[in-house]
Length: 136
Ligand code: ZN
Image (cartoon, rainbow, N blue to C red; front, side):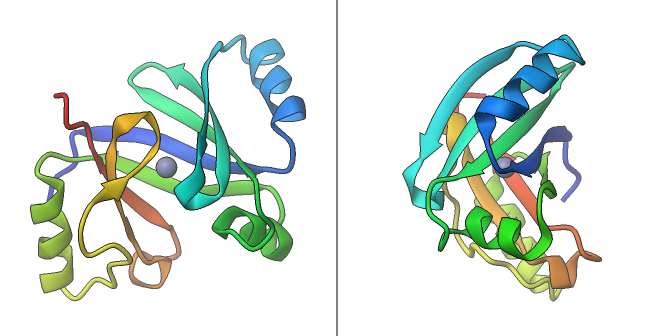
């Protein structure tokens, strides 16, 4: 399984318009992309910290995964994403190991990445995303 690095940390926020200036003004990071992922009912904003990104997630639909998360838990860390190679293989491997896999096959994420999630009940409470850059 061995990930190559932490690709990003996903943070659920109520309002990108408030969260983006915080990361820019306090941490001095630059928001280099804002993207809506219709599939996941979110609008995302990205910052780079070395090799790792911070992905801010604003809900576009209260019934979507981030909408529900915000209602239940409020703002905060939503998931952690590992970069892997051969994502489809890694998802099958996790399943073979008895991990509850949310996406049995890769699907499309932000930034043209292929992604798949592992259920937090199987990962000691951390919603874990595996992602592969098909252009790498
Ligand atoms: Zn993510």
